Structures are given as structure tokens and as C-alpha cells.
Image (cartoon, rainbow over the protein chains, first blue to last red):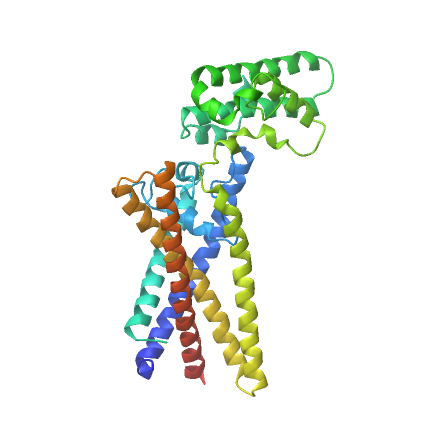
Length: 122
Length: 242
């Protein structure tokens, strides 16, 4: 079971590092950007654009809606989030945080899940 | 005139809404302005100012009724249209009554918040179930993990190592499972859009349901596997630092 010790340690260090970056950017986006966007929306009397969320995954949805260009992978009429409204209410600071968050999320997920599969960790 | 009170942010947000949503938002805004003024305004000229705001609400509703009669019929039942019943979309008089009545209480009457109604096409019905599941799952998971750590300790094992591994696995599962779910959702909606399955109507709902199901399965699978990897990483680093 599992890979040889050296590769396992290197993978663990890189995986843990990427995960820490992901965690920091996730929390930063959620606390610094998402709460601001939601406050501005609330002040404007617009209902929360992502009403289904209970535990905080909407941070991902907001960040994706903001940072990815409108298109087939970020459709304007996404039923799970009101993309145009979220984009309208985000600032350039929010966009930067969202990009950092999404990039670190994609990199960390591919590295950790892909690496785990390649090294056959169980 | 009425829109001078509207924050700049609202204006920006409004531009992206479609015409009907915009008209409904304007109407709601007029009613909420009336409610606020009713609550806060005292002193001479109050009656005239309130009359002006009532007139604004009537004009906003008339605009809604003239331009979007078909859409309006979907949200305001015909039976209520001439009566003092239903939501503010029934008629302007109903809206004004609700606004003035609601001025006495701290909370806005939900019948006034008509913009919420027209967003019902979003996956609002699923929201309740997802929220409950979202709150129960981590709690149950944390309980199982605590149990694991406790049993390792009772067996005289390295319980601190186990607890670090379990916490890391919990974090990895939560984060990476969510990201994998989001990725699946994005891919699924893209495929649905390419296949011409618009995300409205019965076919669209079936598509959305399928996408959500696949998203949930992928998310849980990824979460399960991320948990294993997270535990492996924590244990490897723990042992390495020894």
C-alpha cells in the first residue's frame, strides 16, 4: 500500500502546502469579498442570489461567477446562482481574490486528487 | 424623483435584470419607500409627501400591468386581481395597503417582497433539503471522527496523530469534495447547454435534477477519496517529523 517513502513525503509537503494556500484564499474570499457582496446586495433590497447554500460552498459559486468569463462554463442563466447580479456587485478587489481562490482551488484539487490516484494512496 | 433615494448600487444591479424583473423591482421599491416614509416622516407636509409616494406606487404598478400583463398573470392569480387579497402584485391598492400596514411593524411583510417571488424559478425548492443535508452531514462526520480518535486512545494508540489525521481528512474532504462538485456542476451545465437543454421548463428541470445528482455523487466520491489522501498526508508528515 502507498508509494515509496521519499515520494510520499514530497507529495505530502506539496499537497499540504497547496491545501494551505487554498484554505487561506478560500477564507479570504469568503470573509473579505463574499460578505461585502452580500451586504451590498442586501442593502439594495435584492434577494440573495444563491439561496440554496447552508454551509458555505456558495463562496465557490460566487468566486466562479465573478472570475470566469461569461460563456458556456459560466452561463448567464445558471439556475444555482444569479451570475449577472453577483458580477455587477463585485469590485476589482473581489475579482482578484476570486481569481486567486479559483486558481488555487483548481491547482490543489488536480494535484492532490491526481497525485493520490497516481501514487495509489488508500 | 423616487429613484434619487435608490442607492447607486441598486441602479447598477437593475441594469442587468430583464424588463419584467426591473418593473417588479421598481414597484417593490416604490412600496418600500412608502413604508419607510410612513414610519419615519413626521411633521408638516407629511400627508402630501405620502400621497406622492402612493402615486409613485400606482404609476409603477400601472407600468407593470401595461407592459408585462402576461408575466403578471403568472404571479398574481386572476381571482385576487380586483380584491384586497394576495401579494402586492394583485393590484396597486393592495400593495399600498400592505405597505402602510407593514409600516407599524419592524419586519417587512413578505407579501411586499415581490421580487423574491419572481426568482422562484431558481432552485429554491431544493434549497431547504440541501441546507438541512449540508448541516447534518458535517456534524455526523465530525461525530464519527471523534469516535475514531476516542477508540484509538482507548486502545492505547497515538491518539494525537489520529486526531490530526482525522481533522486533515475532514478539511480535505470538505474542500476538495466541494470543488469537485462545483467542477462537475459546471461541466454538466455546459453539456446541457450544448445539447440544447435550456434550463427552464420540464426538460430543463430534468436536466438540472440529473446534473445535481451527478454533482452530489462526484462530490461525495471526491470527498471520500480526499479524506483518505488528507489522512495519508497528515500521517506521512507526522511520521516524517518524528
